[in-house]
Image 1 (cartoon, rainbow, N blue to C red):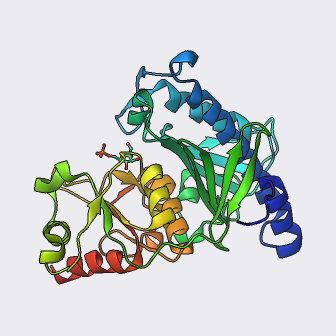
Image 2: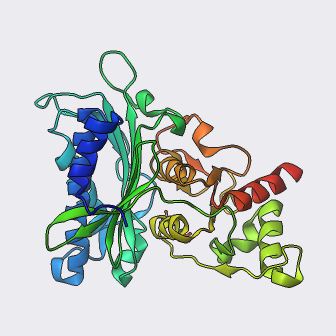
Length: 334
Ligand code: P6P
């Protein structure tokens, strides 16, 4: 167990002693963590807080918004817009970018987020979360959507906060993966794990099996071999988990290994996949890679993809290195 220090102290030490984090990035991460704490408090109220159910509106993805989707988005915007560390923000819940208003100082960072991932689980009290990613705005006056269209390898910070039995913030700035657990009595996030490692091998896969008839052949081959267990070519039995919240599934994989898959399928062949590249796949890919795992779209490293648009979707295979490499190899063999 690492020394029990707060997120603030950890970030100050990373800034002062390690030189990893410039002051503005430290401020950004502290503000995001504080916003996640507020979202956690709203989530935990449930039916007592008039935060459940549908907002009777659709987001840019054409998905029905939950009240908490909108609340979480507003909390993140309001917490970050005045601090002087950001030039603009982008969110799953907003069609265009949100440029920091002129009444506030502009910074050099770009913040992207899925404010409440897995919101279909809100009303049934299953873990959900916030995912965020940070880029540096390219040189030049002003800020535009084009500035956000950078490969995931350009990220300077990424993380998520999972609102489950514990509220846990998981973070990387390129020097491993660090875990902070919210101490509700103190009101601060306490360092509980450093340098998380994803085991290279696993016996657990995460995929929505109800889509099986729509998958491409390499995915069908991979899953069929897992389902054959010890009697099949894998020579071992597998288990399956699917929470329906990427944050919860990825947190489990970072904690005990596994492979998370949301592949392209025939239902909407024009879409590369369901998940979004900028504020879901890229931050999760960096965390997984920083913990020794792999993340591809079935053909290439997710973090090598240069986005063509803000809400670009991508096929996702991420987790234990040897499993991701196997299913990716099946794609190249197909
Ligand atoms: P399905 C949540 O809506 C999400 O974007 C991810 O968090 C989750 O892994 C996936 O979609 C679940 O999708 O099709 O199984 O409901």
